[in-house]
Image (cartoon, rainbow, N blue to C red; front, side, top):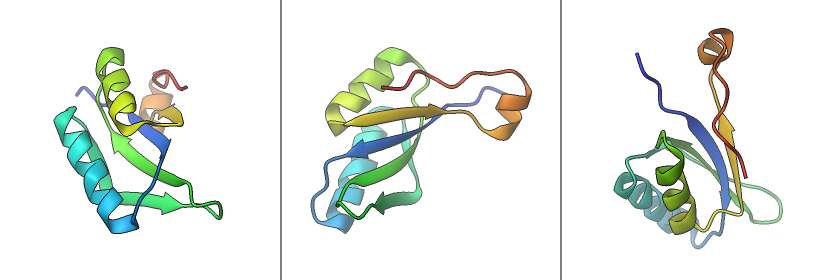
Length: 91
């Protein structure tokens, strides 16, 4: 089964619930998904979101651009790591 990579992204925030909904909609437009409303704020007000997909670099870049992501961390899960897969590129 083909898995889609996960990404943690740090992005600009606005009112928390409104921004979470905006991020979910942006993800849908790019064949991605905000995982279970996973959106977290740190002490400085930075918003971190967990995204599932997209799986190719061009689509990832388009999503990063629309989200205006400051950071983008590509991840694989434990099963993928065990199988020798590598995380997608981070920025």
